[in-house]
Image (cartoon, rainbow, N blue to C red; front, top):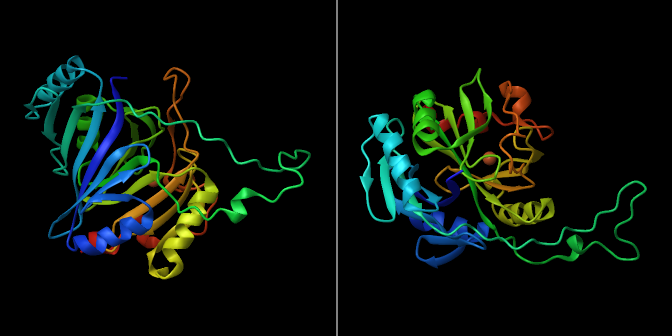
Length: 299
Ligand SMILES: [Fe+2]
């Protein structure tokens, strides 16, 4: 696939300073005011002032100029205006108004991190020693931006823009609901578009080392701010990842995840159509109503 990664996102919020404090606590590195980096992905989040919370820009990485040319041609066939520069192109998703920037950029290089030794029935990987997870005082540090989820008033048209235009691949879908999980990398999903009564950013999601780091990060965020909790800990059925959702001060949900499905061979992955209920979680606490539709979206 010519697309290889999400590069960065720009989120508009009414109170940038309050959001900045949250994302610092979340574990992102603030390199300049309102600009945040992950451990492996470089600068991946920009916060700007906006009257209401929303995803303003989404960046996607490609390898070479030929990729940009093919994407521009496909978007133009969909009657989408394309602004072309040497190393990037810009186009606006017609339903949500999200500015999409497709840019030539390096592929993400992530060093393989050793897995935690886990004991199980008849299987002792760690003997005569306490688990390092118990004493780990390292602050949680998101490795990269994993995916974004947006609500669209015409999810089918938004899907057409991203799949037929930009070149995302479909990984799974919930046809009854009209939601599509799409990837622009080997990750199971980097973008999910779901129908909504108004355009909104449902959540952003950030890769963590493992489920223990998700727990450590969320616990720390909740220590003085229990109101930040949304939903977790659980394991999604679509994508298989562990998750814990929190809320930033503007109302955007923010997910720590680990152990997402990876699709290396498109021929071996079979797209599955799920119903909304069975796709949501393999196990988790009951899903809060606000997760399904945040109150501010309903106006
Ligand atoms: Fe997610």
